[in-house]
Image (cartoon, rainbow, N blue to C red; front, side, top):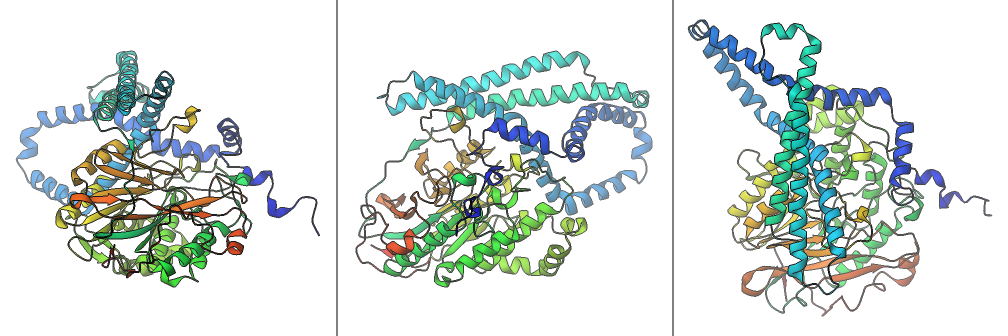
Length: 612
């Protein structure tokens, strides 16, 4: 029996949030029709209006305070008030310094994400695409690098010039000093505060745009990496299966947010990938299985449950598996409605963090360590770190109160980075980052950020384990790939807001580390200076059920002169058709040209690398 409309094939409602089935204009129209105006006004007030007014009125308040202090200096500093103020300041720094710094850093990069990065990236990539049209097809790498660098420089100059123009237009309405009498006129104060804030933000935009353009111009340009051949017969080699963006859904026939009906249904592709890994591991053992984010489609409990259920038949694989969160695990407010937003005071994002942390603890809690915020040194395992919070976490998951969310506010940032330590001084270590910026709106869920704390921890670990090799796993891509594109929309991705800064910091590791990420669903292996960058394709996204997908098993280890090297990967194909992988057998679809099998076997533990 077959109904007129087969519900297993979905319908137009499954495409409601799909960027593959609908244009951005269409999605924007739906957003305007569905968005909650009261919530939007409240969110704008909390996140934009109040900070802008405070930023603009701050110079006036500071000038008033300085004048009052200077006129009463003797009275103020002759008593016990200075000592009292000092104690208060020390107390604030001791108890609230680090959370306050995190909040300031997050707000700083949020400003960049809203004001600088989109304008700069759009300008840069548009210029690059235009310039590449005039490059000959056989242009050498140096010419392409020069084109990319000049596009970044011109883009920075354009942003800087436009920002200076805005400063010039707003400057006549600014006022930087005042008296107590000015506080009595709300309209005068608001007028000055508005113009002050425009000048401050535009001035910052001018400096930041120029800085970003200069940084992108001077840094090594991304290049495709010419792969070295198969791994050598000697030396330390680790086999790392790299999965990403599996977007597990909570329904048997559910479709994913981005793909809608142009993507696969359910979770059979992920289950087929696990079956392939199981068969490969039985014949040629793996050392690590890395899933670099977007494990779920919207961070719902049912999706995490499906993920754990899919892993249950493969306990020997879960012993090798580590994961990091992606933007879909944390920042999607409503998978069916991109217009829905959470207020900054909502506990819902904290719930998504707790779900992800609980799953990570179950999967890798005894094998990874959290890093001390102050020293950057590894401390307790993830499970030991979470144990004191277990009761509060369970209570919050059951009740979801604002107080519970506040009590657990520091658990997530303190949990990252996580590190799987090398077992020997020259072994392989894995550093797991959270690269997700905090957003409260599904439509802007994809922004990325690596905090200064996490970056400092990477550098501390690299110094402490000076002979070790490192895989640094994050979800977001750090650079836009050096690929020609037909449409500008293909060039405008959601790379890290501070990606160029992060890549420059990683240059300091001297070729001892490589970055592995997902997010874009694109298959790319390249380098930026000495930093090797590996982008994982998604084995489930961007194709319908009848199309093949693939993932890679990478061989990493010691190459010439002891350098950390990425050798030729093994490409594992998942045949199209939900049931075809089972019918063909789990190894039938492996690309034999890439799968260089020699019958070798080794221990599957991280401290026992392959001897080849």
